[in-house]
Amino acid sequence: MARNEQLIRQHKLLQMLEDSRFGRTLEELRDDLVESLGLGTLHVRSLRRDLEALQAAGFDIDTVDSARGKLWKLGSRGRGAFKITASATELIALSLSRDLLYPLAGTPFWQGIETFWNKLQEELPGTVWDHYENYRQFFYVRGMPAKSYQQQHGILATLHRSIQEHRVVDIEYQSIGKDAAKRKIEPYAVAFYQSSLYIIAAAHERPITSPDRVRHWKLDRFLKATALDQWFKMPDDFDLKEHLGASLGIFAGGKAKDFKIKISSYAARWVIEDPWHADQRVEKQEDGGIILTVKAAHELEIIPRVLALGAEAEVLSPASCRKTIAEMVQRLAAKYA
Image (tube, rainbow, N blue to C red):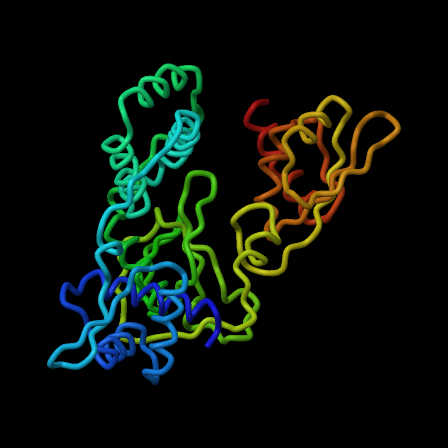
């Protein structure tokens, strides 16, 4: 089994042990894992190795003898709360991160952030909080959109569970300017990009070899999501980090290609100060300007950035992107004539 699937299985094991007060036998755990994860088969020896790996990683998992046989259960340390310590500087860093993640309000992720923050408030002495509050007033987070995923809470919970269990999901999805459509997707992961959540998922009806099978579905556009009693297997060669890192933004569909942009000496410093991508290439010109080369999966990842620089930037290639911008500029000129 691929390592990511083994980790998913071990995570599910921990959830089962957390929900069980008196413990479970290996056979009971195996049967529930097979059903919840849609596995074809699972030997108890593999399950025992998973539990022993979790014990080796520091999880407090005990075994007790009973009339039902040997039971596996979380020990007292596994269920008890650990004492939390933090410095004022660590609190400032955490609170700034909390502000940056505010668009996640209403999601299970935000609930986890808030639960941990509340635990800190209960555990730490008042002197630490006083020191933190004195310094926190000098640090601000601005520019975050006023959005929340409270309405999509149930949908995200379904998708998150389906990612863990590799379940096919029946969705109702409405792209901008189109009618709502029913689709089946195979959800791989959740991505947080520019204050919005995206579901990285394969279109179930597309063949495995299709280059645009894996797409990025914006959570805001989900109207409904239902987990099916149908399971999928992620491709062995799919690497999420490589998939997301190959392009400038969050667009998907096709292979990322190079975009070459000429930027004037006036605007060059802005682009150098705030890079568009970690792997961008910059060629300095004699007049102080630069030629920027950056990869993107779609020209709409490039065009807004180019237009934001006005006449200080010019797309050199590909020609199709130059044509799109030229048509946009003509329509703008007509509006402002």
